[in-house]
Length: 264
Image 1 (cartoon, one colour):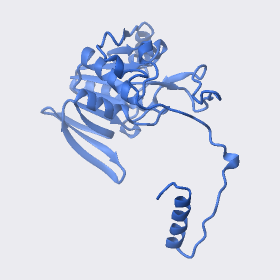
Image 2: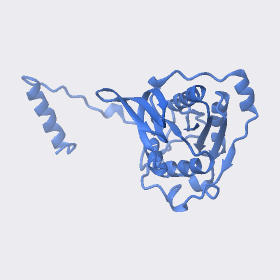
Image 3: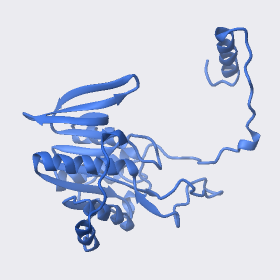
Image 4: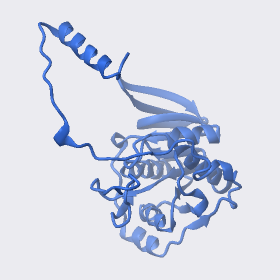
């Protein structure tokens, strides 16, 4: 069984400063770590390998220093790691990112199962996993909290829904995004850290993975962040809604939202 895990390097803390001119995050000097949800995806992959055999390959896209998260994966005993890197990928949104990852996976590690964290903490969009399922032509199971069984080319997964937990069964290959409730990620072993210290990932370019240059980086990104800012809490005004009953209060809130043109 071939298992792929897509991981991401994110800022090490939530106290990231913003550029007052460009209104974008200043990542330099902030320190980076592997996206916390991706640790659960790595653990799920390793547990599946222990149960069913096979190979686990980690993929990430980013600058050369993103190789650090692949070293973390290797330290956890992942078999191999591939870094997609190059100026042509800069400025990619989730659509362009999932496109590049999918092309790399197709070429270097055609997968039975692709695992991702349910979201990245620096973007919080939860769009890369679903994007991968479309580009790869695979089924999608999102927000998994338990992987129950794999047999006869099918997999059973329980996923967290708004109103409870739903168990589904689908055919392989499949993309699964995982929630933190799925498992407790293992720590890197001493042997794993020694291997990671000497590990050099395969670095691939857009030409290597036969990308359409119009679908990667800024050119392939129909969405962009126009402005990021910290809310000015000193100017926020709180208002207590009074009313004779719940219905009366709800109507007053609805009226306020209509006047603010938040709802119609």
